[in-house]
Image (cartoon, rainbow, N blue to C red; front, side, top):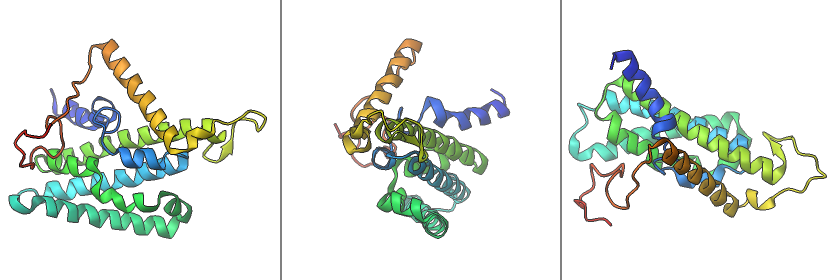
Amino acid sequence: MSAQQNKISVLTNGIIKENPVLRLVLGTCPTLAVTTAAFNGLGMGVAATFVLVCSNMVISALRKIIPDKVRLPAYITVIATFVTIVQMLVKAYAQDLYSALGVFLPLIVVNCIILGRAEMFASKNNVLDSALDGLGMGIGFTFTLLLMSAIREILGAGSLFGVTIIPESIDRISIMTTPPGGFLTFGVLMALVIFVETKLGQKKKRAIGCEGCPSAGVCQSKGECK
């Protein structure tokens, strides 16, 4: 594989092959919580993408300097710095989005996608590849949030980005704007992904335990988790 093909592979990996939400099942809390409206989903996705790209680049640049024993606290400090920047910018320039996202905006700090990519990829690869990995994962996360929120907003409120697209005379499916509606939408999309994987012969093995866990490299359980 050429260097250019390798860069493209790193970028597209998080969009389709290892979509953080629909394939790796990470970041489900904000996914379910903020996808009641397309504007909220897009805002959360862009914020998380910014943090992913910036934190991946910094962690990659410092990977040979950060002592192994304190790498997780160091990673969290870097991530928290960029989350704080995002939080201040959103609060200053997008008050409605800041209010809609609420506590889930600062909770990006502990998002498994971001910490997982820092540990699994950024700490082992160069700055450019780490930036591409963060961008790809961010795009995949944003796409999933936008897809879920669009489905829920259209069916639940009859609108998209606040613009009415379904006449008032047609009843809304109000459950779609509630937590059960989020779980239902997420379940349907997951089932669709597994169906497509099966048809294409690319079904991903999903096992309960340490395999595939983004924290497996630093966990001290040594495979004892079941």
